[in-house]
Length: 169
Image (cartoon, rainbow, N blue to C red; front, top):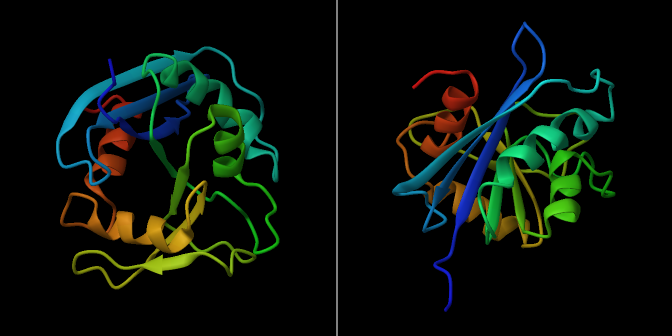
C-alpha cells in the first residue's frame, strides 16, 4: 500500500524556563494548502547556543517531533540549509543528512555569507525571504516557497509552526 505524500514544516522555540519545544505541521501537498496533522514535542534539555553549531541545539528537538510524523517527501525549516556558496552546512544541511529528505530553508534575514540564497518576495511584502535547499534545486525550492499557502511574507505553514512551538493555538 503506497502512502500519500507528506510534506512537513518544522520550527523550534526555546522557552525562558529551558528546554525546547518543536512543532511540525504536515500537508498532502508542497503548498501546504490544507494541514492534515500537527505535532508538538518538548525536549527538557538542549545544548547551549554556539555560533556555527546551531544544528547541535535544534536537531534533538526536530528528531523528537519528526518521530511522530512518519516518512516525509519534503521538510521546510525556518533557517538556512547552507551558510555560504561553498556549502558550509547550516541547520538544513544537517537535517537533510539526518532525515534523508529534501530540505528547503526559508530565512527571514540575510546572512552575510549566504550570497547564494535566492530572494523570494511573497504577497505585498517588500522584504524578501532567503531560500536555500538540499536534495532539490534551489530554483525549484524558491518556486515552492512562492506558491506556499498564505497571503503574507512568511508562508502560513511556517507561521503555524512558530505559533505552535510558542504554545499559541
